[in-house]
Image 1 (cartoon, rainbow, N blue to C red):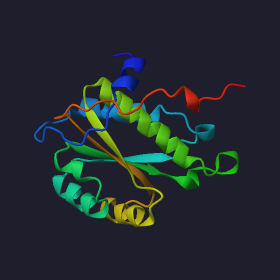
Image 2 (image 1 turned 90 degrees about the vertical axis):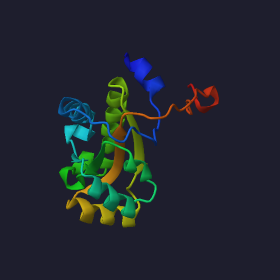
Image 3 (image 1 turned 90 degrees about the horizontal axis):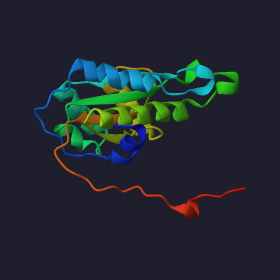
Image 4 (image 1 turned 60 degrees about the vertical axis):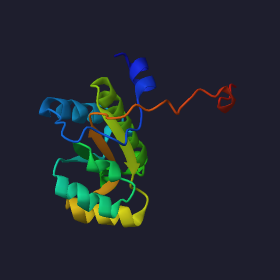
Amino acid sequence: MTTTEAIRARRSIRKFKPEAQIPQEQIDMLMEAAMMAPSAINTRPWEFVVVKNKDKFNEIIQVHPYSRMLLTASLCIVVCGLPDEQSGLSAGFYPQDCAAATQNILLQATDLGLGTCWCGVYPIKERVEGLRKVLKVTSVPFNLIAVGVPDEVCRPRGFFDPGKVKYL
C-alpha cells in the first residue's frame, strides 16, 4: 500500500475481531513508525505503553469512558508525552510531536491491514491522572490507540474541502 493509499484508507475502527492476535513483529513496526515521526529539535519527547492485558483494558475504560472499543481490541498503545525533555526553542511542543507519532502509528497499522481508533486523553486532567495511575507512569498520557483486526467496514469521513485552503 502506498502512503497515499494508507492516508485515504485509514478509518476509526470501533469493532475488532476479539480473538485476533497482533504478532510482535507488527507491534515493533508500529513502534518504529511512531519513533520515526518528526519532533521539535529532534527531542523525541515521547514514550509508549503497549497494553495487551484485558484486565488493564477494563481499568482504562473506567478512566476513559469513550474507549469501550478496547473490549474487542487486541492491544492498546498509549502515547505519552515527556514535556521535561523539551526546553528553549523546543519547549511546549510535545503535544504536536506526540500527535505526529500517533499519526505514523495509524498509517502503519492501516498498511498492515490493522484497524485503529485514536482516543484523546490530554488535556483532560481526570483522564491524564487516571491513566497515570493505571499505567504507573509519570509522563503525560496524551492519547490511547485501540489496535486490532477490523470487524467492521466504515465509510470515509474525511474529504477535501477547497474552501479550507488559502493561497497567497
